[in-house]
Length: 197
Image (cartoon, rainbow, N blue to C red):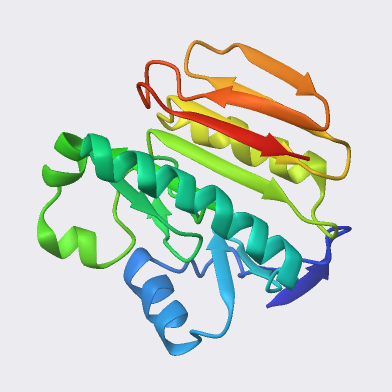
């Protein structure tokens, strides 16, 4: 394998073209290396992501808690943390910082599929930029979520003090400011979150 280091300090392993890691192999690799955060892109490359810093982890946890509290009241879906992998229809396996899936969509999956990297794209995702993240790569990931069925996504950039909202209709809205109120719109009905950048 050839390894290249990208600007974001993520390490990407490119398997030789004649060898592609199937879903079962990649799942087993992740289980055998639980201390690593791994994703797989649509081309089969494995991306090793360093753990976030403590402050980013704290911030991510606050975002997740707000979605969990709303979901417990509404009970319309399921919330997943940043260690959860999903197999998208383009074969990428991604782990958003926070994600939510509508209950009826999740319940349609066989239990065996839910135990691994479920073949489903979340309805809602949040990605939070840490200091070492490439904004270009995060924007590409948000587009990938949308192209694979995500209905609403928030890219929270605490460095540039912006939130980029991705909607399933293809529209992108960029909001700036130190303190923003975001809406779950028609996807997470009645959900609002105050984001401090």
